[in-house]
Amino acid sequence: MSEVPAARNTLRVIRYLASQSGPVRAATLGRELGLPRSSVYHLLSVLRAEGFVVHSPEHQGYALGPLLGEIGSSVLSSRALARLAGPVLERLVAETKLPVVAHLGLLQHTDVLYADKISATRAPAVVTSVGVRLPAHLTATGRAMLAAIPSAQFEALYSSASTGSTEDLPLRTQFGPRTVAELRQILDATRLRGWSTEDGDVDPAYASVAAAVIDHNDYPTASIGLTFRRTLVDDAQWNRFGRAVAAAAAALSKRIRGNS
Image 1 (cartoon, rainbow, N blue to C red):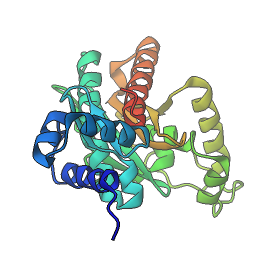
Image 2: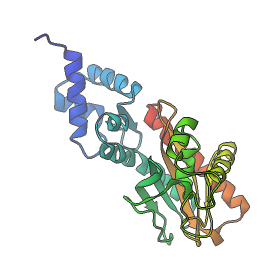
Image 3: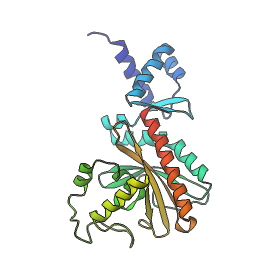
Image 4: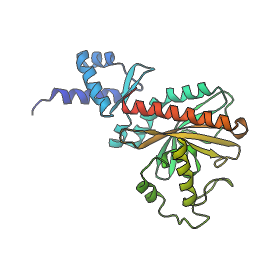
């Protein structure tokens, strides 16, 4: 059997990163795997460019990227994204200086699965705990991703709903889109604005904003959202929160693409 050292070492790097609970420095990789530093940096550079490895500036280390989740399992993808998004969510909460909750959502069919959550002091006890699923059309995190998916995919997801009925889409409160046509209007506004909103659609006491995280294929691999008490903010604060989640989502998008 022929030897291909570069391919073998690439797999060793991936296997080692998979065994670690957090980002690993390049020097540690070289020492543990017995590889020259130049070789380690070359392998990591290629893996980052291809989306298999991401860099965490806070840890000055490397971790497996969410792209491997598409090859392996959705569990790996959500965990990898949550580890990478954690510092971004923490910074987002700190910068608001208000009792808010930041969360990371993943689109699964017509639901949002929440993969991570960071709460500020005195933040509301929201339903978006890790592992919770909610209808994507009712949440800001879901709408941010639905607005960014290809139109053909959107039509496939919601093809079973008749746009003429007032009971197409389930509601949790008296607010929210009742038909696919109403949902399309919300998504059109989301694209123009650059971030999504939700006001009392999940819980009458709370509202949210969110923005999509875009991967190498220009696909919304996740979204970052902020939830807060409706009485906490005025119009100017809504816009401030919207710009904040858009910036946080852009930062995480860069990390996923290996540009951070």
